[in-house]
Image (cartoon, rainbow, N blue to C red; front, side, top):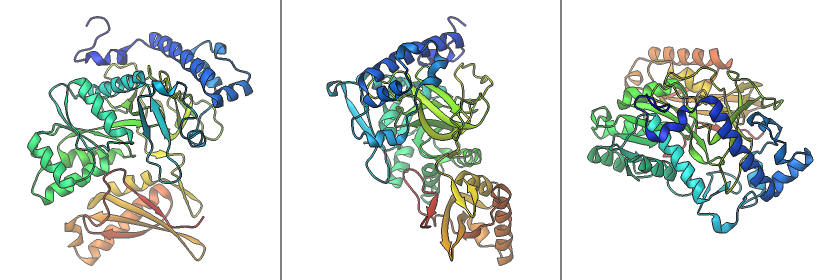
Length: 440
């Protein structure tokens, strides 16, 4: 090994193995410049700094980031569309916007340097999970205002892979292209890939017999049990990619081939874990809310952005040798919690319980309602055709088993509705797991 290189390391990944002391120096130099830019050009940030009697020059080391004010999603909505930009419009080369379902979207802008940094992060993401020059990447993330499609596209091309910009939807065509083009990598949401598996089986196509070998899945929470289902059904290795539009897009963190949690590209995105109630910094290994600072973003500096994603920074070094810290798989957000009959409930808890029971399929929906002043909880779950053809006693036994599994992790005893395969509506983007009919 020479110059800090590791066996099989892609040249794009050199920063992944930077000695920690050197990494901290890089982070601090970039933080100082980002804070200076925000202070001089973003009125909201300058106001909050002045309220704290802080100047950019007060930062002495990277750990001083904790002195800076937080940013939250409402800041972007309140300053729609360009109020948080820190550069002249002539330097903006692209806009993206979130897929929010209510109100105005969250708008983000990029300079050419921002896009170059993002492409490098995505190139490192693909390299981390084993994608290389010569791979054929079927990109089934959405193109357009959503960051997923173009983010994955430019990163894969920068790596030297061939990209099929198929985008979302038209499932039959997706399967035809995957088969005829010999795609070796698929990028989409995990729930949509399972839909592809189901539809391919209907068309007589076994994805396990195709050249496909890697899946890059993100944009929605998914569990380790879901990974196992995906890998078995698709004959691939499934990798978790993490990102958010406010920070850049996909490529903020990515799993390596060890599949032990996504590595954050810390030279570009500085992570903290805080207690979401007290806002105090938590040590590595402790679960809390992920806070991110984009260290190089020029168009729209995002400093101490509260993601609302609940995770922890892994304290141990990954076996791959990267010095970049990892986050634990994100299965929930601090703002997706349901309160049912006074109990805190997360959809990921339901999923984990369901997938442990044989005979169920990884498609479900949670319906919460209120009748006569009391909360009701119904879980609709698809089961295999073999289960449905079983005796009434067998179905009741499965229903009871599922009820016990859910009750053991949530403390709630839901109503269970077992439905046939492909009964629940599929989504080409993020799966809609919860329907809350209550008027709260």
